[in-house]
Length: 107
Length: 120
Image 1 (spheres, rainbow over the protein chains, first blue to last red):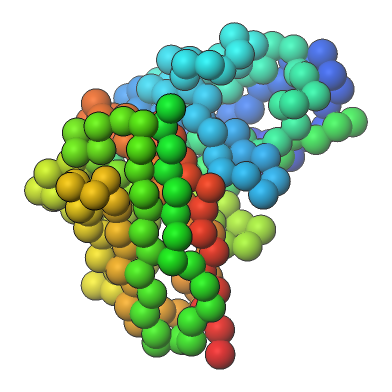
Image 2 (image 1 turned 180 degrees about the vertical axis):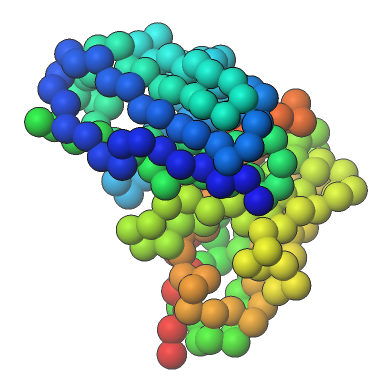
């Protein structure tokens, strides 16, 4: 199975900050990496697919990059509605594994 | 708009069975693969199983293989998850999710989830 790790596990940031979250795969997954946002008590929401494609309706302050084993999710200017937990997920092979999540909260 | 509505969750004893349903609307259900993803209380996300649009090849996580069965009824736009021999560690919110449909296996849309609690 492909193991996914994320760093940091949590971070505190202020509105307007630039935030970067890193995701690493245990083996190369090409660009088969996706990012989701989840708010408490809600279902996850797709933000980025295939490493860098922005899902329709997602604000352009979200961006993704990377390939192979190392990926990043960047929020260019954090907004109040962005405080949530973020998960990466590999879609290269089954089982389709998730990272453990990164919780972004208010400083 | 795409809508996915899960149902069938509840409390069940260890060793028991439960069948979850997911009613889909807003897209051509018969053209897309579907997934189940679960989340244990205060834990991360775990992919459970996938069924292609034509049920040709189903995939399961090792943790549920041989106990859970995914199926679908394209005439009724409904996805199912039959869960047998349930264990305490199966306690979770279960989400159905629409696949992207481009053999890229990401979860494009999610339902609101249904809670399964396995407890005596």
